[in-house]
Image 1 (cartoon, protein in one colour):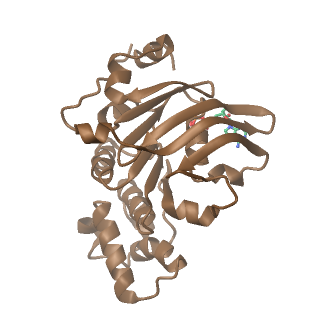
Image 2: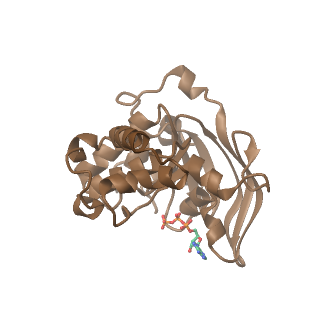
Length: 271
Ligand SMILES: Nc1ncnc2c1ncn2[C@@H]1O[C@H](COP(=O)(O)OP(=O)(O)OP(=O)(O)O)[C@@H](O)[C@H]1O
């Protein structure tokens, strides 16, 4: 049986102020259907700002589906229907008032497989700002530099920004994708198993990076790796069969879960 993850407050501790964070994202009684299949059932979760929230649970339980509702990526899947409400900063993101493009600028996303564009490192990061109308070379240079610095990649690539993004390592590509997401100044960063295709050292770098970024951004990550959730997150949400079984501060969830199913999952009895 795999060792039960220990949430350690020691290396990445959170202040009292952080634990009293106001919810930035409020998900209320959310149901999601793919055609006739119900993938999310009556999900209500509050996600605090400037902290890391991890979604855990066995394969197919709805983690990625819920993540994708937060920037309306599910809109692109034909036959998808939702009921309930998701508010970001108090605004219902499924109401007619919110433009999807504006929402996606505010809610960036990084995927399992690094997916840089087949363009230079510079052009990858400058892509979003250009799309949003930034034309000045000086301003673009500044955005590229600050985004690559924020993604802890600047030192490794600053001397060859014109190189193809496809020529750097997978771990560097993933940090480039994070830089690309940060370049349009999001508030929220969604990470869908962003380290599962990476080696342990690259994984550690992304985990450390997420720790730094959480001071400025709200991070929601789907992870298959309970140890990762325990290491880096402030709050953990446990899913099973499309339902949220429970969610709480990570330390509590891993040391004193309220539900027997959570206990069984975190101690490796299934999943
Ligand atoms: N586009 C789709 N059309 C129909 N069903 C889908 C679609 N995407 C996901 N599903 C189904 O919805 C359920 C939840 O899938 P989801 O990908 O959200 O789970 P997950 O917890 O993220 O799984 P994993 O950990 O394996 O990525 C699964 O039963 C899946 O088969």
